[in-house]
Structures are given as C-alpha cells and as structure tokens.
Length: 254
Image (cartoon, rainbow, N blue to C red):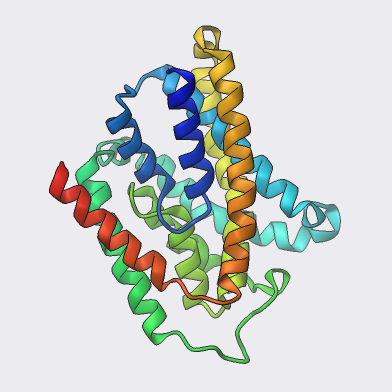
C-alpha cells in the first residue's frame, strides 16, 4: 500500500465510519477499485485507521468518558453484548458475505429502510432528547438492531441509528448513542484484529500508516461535527437516497 492509497482509504474510513452509509462497504469497494489486495498487511492498516476514528469520537465526547457517567456506559456495554455474542458465534459464516454484491444489495435495502422510517417518523414530545436519559430497554433495542450490521453494506451506524429512532430517541440522540456505542464496539474489533495481525506491522510502510492515521482522525472528527449540525436541520432521507443510488450503481458495474 502506497501513501496515495493510504490517504484515500483513510479519508473513506474517517468519513463513512459514523455516517449511516457503511464504512465496511465503502472500504471493500474502494480497495477493489484502487487495486489494494486483501492481505494481512492491509488488515493491519485498517486497524490503525479504525483506532484513529475511535480517538476522534473519544475526543469529541471526552466529558462523557468519566466515572460520573458510569450509568451511560453500563447501558452502552449492554447494547454491545448482542453484537459481540452473535458476531463471535457466526464469525466464519459472516466472512463469506464480504463481497461487492452483498454490499450493493444491503446498501439498497438499508436505504429503503431509512426512507420508510423517516416517512413514519414524527417529532414527539416524549422522544428522548438526551443520550444520558436513554433507557435500558432502548439500549437493548439499539443493540439488537446492531446485529444486522454484521452483514457488510448494512452500516453499524445506520443499524444503530434506526434502532434508536424506532425505540423512541430523536434523531440527534440516536446518532450520539451510535457514536458512543462505536467506542466499545470498535475497540473490541480493532483490539482483536490487532492481536491477530500484530506481526504484520514489522513489514508496514510506517510513513503511509502514520499519514493514513492522521487523515482518518481529522476526517472522522470533522464528519461527526458536521453530521450533528446537519441533523439540527435535516432528516436521514438524503442518506437513504444515497444508499439506494450507490447500491444500484454497484450492481450495474460489478
């Protein structure tokens, strides 16, 4: 992997990780068109840029990463359990789904889900508007929804945001709960991958890795900030439309 490829993939990771458009799906497609082979070294690089994305969300929500917020983090860990259990049990079957066709169809299906959810969504006074007031039941439903993100192209952010909306959170709160839930999820996944691929770092192009890390961090930080501002004025309809268009294009060119 050269520096140009590292920068492009770092931008894609930082931009798509916290948006409901599937970072994994975009990474699979981008790697295919950039000619980046799926090797242990590229997996090691993906670990690096995922840690950059984790660092970005931790910096933004640093005031919530304290022992005073233990109640919130207990709910986040509770929401993490369904994904951890199902992902561990079916990890071998999930690997067989990592192809462009699956990504394309899940983009389309996910886009339709967003359009349907937004069609029936109405602003209500009883919607939870503070991430610290999310209930255990709501945390469970978000965790259950997150299971669907094991299928590439679904989007972890997309699945958890839909779960939040359907369980009674407003748009901003569902997005923030999704961001915070990404910390234990991505830390676990990246940590597991790091243990598997730590030996591959010996052969790494550390210049490309470092640049990719910085790019992914800056882009992820800016994306989260802009996304939250976007949700103050707009809905998720645009993401639903984008997903459908992107999925159809993929089906036409692969």
